[in-house]
Amino acid sequence: MTETEQAWAALGGDPVLPRRISTVVRDGVLDSRLPVRELARACVGVCALAAAELGARRAGRTEVPRVRVDDGAVGTAFVSERHLLVDGRSPVTFAPLSRFWRTADGWVRTHANYPHHRERLLSALGVRAADVAAVESALVERSSWEVEEAVYAAGGLAVALRTAEQWAAHEQARALAARPLVEHERLDTAPARVLAPIDDGPLSPAAGIRVLDLTRVIAGPVATRTLALLGADVLRVDPPGMPEILDQHADTGFGKRSTALDLARTADRRAFEELLSAADVVLTGYRPGALDRFGLSADALVARRSGLVVAELSAWGAYGPWAGRRGFDSLVQVATGIAAIEGAKERPGALPAQALDHGTGYLLAAAVLRALTEQSEQGYGRVVRLSLARTAAWLTGGIERAPGEGEALGGPEAWLAERDSRLGRLRYALPPVSFEGGPGDWARPPGVWAADEARWGRVTGSPET
Image (cartoon, rainbow, N blue to C red):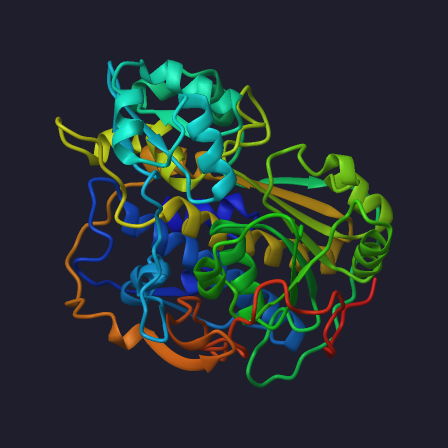
């Protein structure tokens, strides 16, 4: 079974449909020791296939449109944050304290892109100033495990470098191994969803679908950026006191609107409940359990909105001793043995892209699309769950490198575009999700973060339950 067939099976899809996918193979795409190109190709391919399947159903077509996966488009999109220019300026993707550090017995990697994470890291290390030399001095005398636990206890982010064998023996890895790549669960007995037909012209499979985006950083926003491409009305909701990296929003905010609501405030909570009452999909990207106090667990959401699709994304998975820990792609690479595999004897390495984030993002979008297709046949409110660490396990133990040579890659220009926006003139990576009759670009550029009203847009083709 190919990696694309594996991913499609994990999504519960018809095993015949992957034959509708063709691939333009290109050399030099996402080169690494691990089969990153193959993972990226599979994640994008099944996302496009899920979109084509839903589009065909809504357009009344008997045949699912063909899907075309171009390695060049995929490779460019998987490093979209590196290709982004805002008025000619390249964003800074990692802060100075987000890096590998030597310890007394090995290496740790920290993540301090956000101010609150930086302050917690410094507090745990007893360092007053955000100075690289001072942090180096504080770490070089401590063990990696001691640093990992001390920084986590302070609410910061640091992970000790592990080999794949060390991670396999970890209780969290064992918990993940018992779970599928994509988890599915039915949550209520809602009747089949009647999706309004769409024109048999340019296919927008998610037209009229209202999506509440409660995700941050890369994986979740990539998923909702993709749903917006496909016609969904996506509204991202953030707490007003949580800082955001604005260039990151510029990269992943295409097609969406963005607002801020404080769910501890009565008026904002009322506004959120009004949004939820008309939502079709809710995506969450916070630590498992972190939103429960606001009544935003999957069960609580479906209890208030029957037939809802809830998509839950986490770093380490929803089970096991690390389920409640914060995490990012770079840290998951370090914990799961990827950094050791990709590194040299002298220093750990990294994948050529934040492939766990991007890959899981496309899988998450695919899972939502497939849930909507299944609902149109079977009904039921549903939850799907994915995690970066489970995607990492698939990369390191479930995918083989594809043989054969392809076309020359050349530069990325064929898969880049430019447009004006409220943020300035943007150069950006085009979406890699491609199928016959589908969209080639987003209908709207990103807007100013958290500047939109907390309401749904005026859309046609809204589903009925």
